[in-house]
Image (cartoon, rainbow, N blue to C red):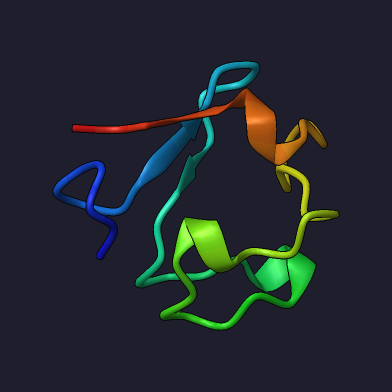
Length: 59
């Protein structure tokens, strides 16, 4: 769980996709349990291909 928000969830400001560490991202071969901060720099939103800098932490 990340220190910035209680859930560790991040939302794409472009399309509304929510990255949930406990689920990972099967479309991008990210295993469950990988924190948002640990995602590779080249990771993109599986729905709209936005880059990590277009995600905001959720409360």
